[in-house]
Length: 237
Image 1 (cartoon, rainbow, N blue to C red):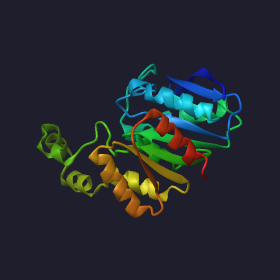
Image 2 (cartoon, helix red, strand yellow):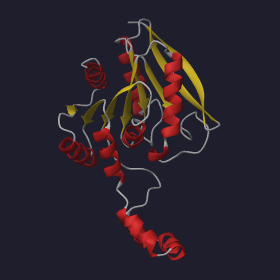
Image 3 (spheres, rainbow, N blue to C red):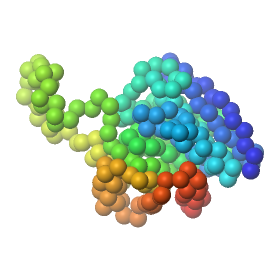
Image 4 (cartoon, rainbow, N blue to C red):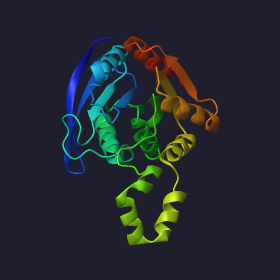
């Protein structure tokens, strides 16, 4: 099926974000919003996301891939992956506005984009599913237990007292927050693993224990296989 590319420019918290819409000539009512890993842009490594969008659009699936704040061609300062809800919300609304025929949006995230995708699923309009590719629950600028050895941690502790230390240890881990959000999410959730790092394997196994019936598929790594698996999952429900 033929498709065309359309550049989108939309606003998030006063900053302009840039996205590219792959729009089929006869679009299906379910589209894909693609969120890259925090270390990549909307094109992906070796144009992986560009090729994925082209392949899905050829199957009738509209795809919007975009650069969050501070990445690629978008303005602003880059935010941690657990602080991208505004970016996703803006892209989500831009997608629905550009494709008024969409009845559902599937949010596809890569790597640590799983953090933003899972947290965004709580309130996103017309969000029918979340697809995670090699999911990892990490975020830039998030404190870990190793921070106990950092001077900044001790300065903060001295300034705020022991209550800060108790609250810090009692706070749920980022991975726990992500898994809880995905377990509570009422829509469809799928996981695609492509020669995954150990962190993705561990996260997926843990999620499978908490969300029975989770769709999980291992792929060899070819771009065509990723597109076929994504399209098959999106049209199976």
